[in-house]
Amino acid sequence: MTTRADAQPTLTTARLVLRPLVAADAGAIERHAGRFEVAGTTVNIPHPYPPGGAAAFITAQHDAWCEDRGATWAVTLDGALIGLIGSPQLVRAHARTRLGYWIAPEEWNRGYATEAARAFIDWAVADGFHRIEADHLSRNPASGRVMQKVGMVHEGRLRAYYRRFDVFEDVELYALIAGE
Image (tube, rainbow, N blue to C red):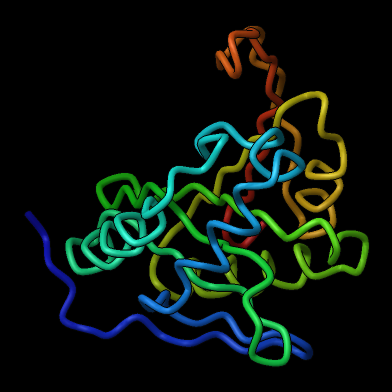
């Protein structure tokens, strides 16, 4: 198992601060991610969100960073958590990572996901990743627009790729290659 010696950095954009998760984020994560508008557009967020589930999630994300398996940041605006962004999958052997994010619905359509995604991509490239992948449910084209805005290229549709709420969902696959 690989371990990281460095602390997870804080990433700053024009309007946002992306910082490592802390235990105090649990309530905001459960409140925002637990809303069906958020959970229903993702593959892994449970709905309903289990009470206490965010505390375990935060611990798992800290462990993933230390073991160089993943990297997740709180997306904050004026100190308030409005979403999460990061990668559940760091694959050093292939210099590949996967981007995932969600933003609280009241903050949608303000460019925050795009701004945070750009910061994540800058971090990923600086941290040695050559390929950054992302996918979104085909029925969520807004997420695809974020991917396009940060320079990702649509690579295809994976039919019936995920089962979500007992429905098979198609997904759109995007990727960005560093230096292209």
